[in-house]
Image: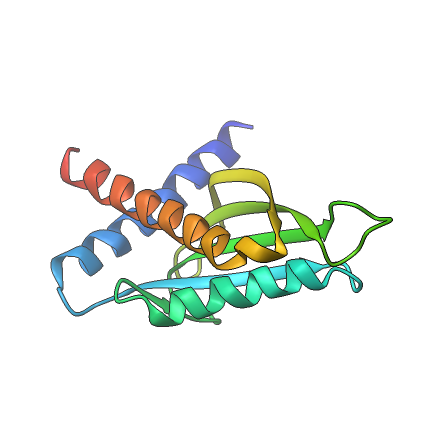
Length: 145
C-alpha cells in the first residue's frame, strides 16, 4: 500500500511539474483528453460530450488531445436519466485524472450531475470551468511549495 501511495505522489509531482512549465510559458495550453462512454440510446449524453469537446476546442486555455503527452483526462459516463422518457435528460459522472508522460494516472476530482437537452452547452461550460479551477489550484499548489 505504501509503495502505491509513493508512486501516486511521484506521478502527481510529475504532472504538477508539467503544469508549472506550462504556466511559465504564456502560449502553452493545457492538454485535455475527453474519454466518454455513453449508453447507445443516450443521445442527450452524447450531445453533452460533443458540447464539451467543442468548448475545449474554442478555449484559449486548453487543447483537445489524445496520446502520450502530459494531460488532464476527463472520464465521462452518461446514461438516460428517465429510461421511460429518452432524449429528455441525462445523468453524467465526470472523473478528472492527471497523467504525465510515462506515469501512472492520478485521481484529481470527480462529480455527478444531470443535464436536460435544453442546457447542454451550459453544462459543458460548467464542467470546463471546473477543469480550469483544477488547473489553477494545481498551479497555485506548485507556486506555494
